[in-house]
Image (cartoon, rainbow, N blue to C red; front, side, top):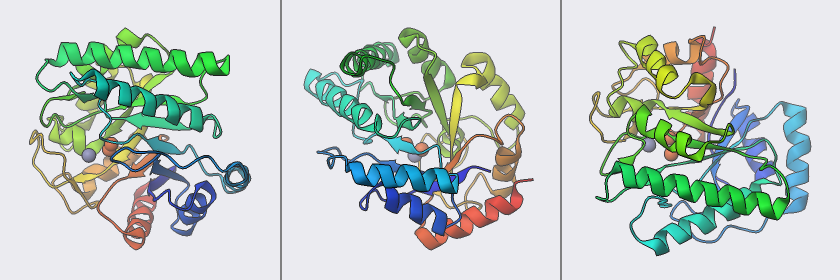
Length: 281
Ligand code: FE
Ligand code: FE
Ligand code: ZN
C-alpha cells in the first residue's frame, strides 16, 4: 500500500523521506514553498541526490508537491494570474530535480467571472506553463500535473467532475491528471459513503479513471454537499472509518498513492497510517 501524509519541507527532501519512514509512510506530500506564496528555497543538489538514493533504497514515492493554495490561475486580476504563472513555472523547473513527482494544484476561484471564464483562464495558464518549462528544458516536463477536486466553496473551479474535465479537455495533454480529495468530493456532494461505486463510475464516465493519479485521504467535519472543506481526522468525521476503508480497498483505487491531510501531528499521522495499513486487505 502506498500511504503517507503531508510533511513540513523545512528540512529538505532527505529529511522528509526519513520522517516518512519513521512514521511508516512510503509516500509524502509537501508544500513547494510557504503555502501563502513567497519565494522558494534554492534546490540543494546534495540533498536531492541523497534523497534519491534514500528513496530508492526505501521504496519511497511518488512524492506529491502541493502548490501554494493562494495561487489563483482563474483570477480576474492579470497580476495575480502572472504571479500564479511564475510560481507554477518555478515549481515545475525545481521539480525537474526529482523526476517522476506529482504536482497538485487547486484549479482556482473564478471570483464572480463564472466557471466557464475560470476554466478558460486556468487552461490557458497551464498551456503557457508547459510551454515555458518545456522550451527551457528542450523536452517533456518530468512532473505529472494534477488538478485537485474541490468542495465548491466560494467560487472554486473544480467543484464537480465536469469542471475538472473541461480544463483537461482544453489543455489537451495526456500527462495532466487528477488528485481526488475524499473530503472535498464529499463536501462537494458526491456520496462516497453510500455510493462509492456510483461516484467512481461517474468519475470514469466524465473524466476517465486513467487520469486519477492520487488520493487525498481525509475525513470531513461537514455533511454531504456542505461545500465547506474542513478536514477531519480519519474515522472522526462525517465520512467515517468504514467508508474510508472501502476507499482504500476499492479495486479501482487500492493501488493509488494515498496522502493524508488530516489535522494531525506526526504521532497522529503515524497512528492513522498504521490503522489504514491494517485495514488494507
Ligand atoms: Fe489541496
Ligand atoms: Fe486536498
Ligand atoms: Zn481541503
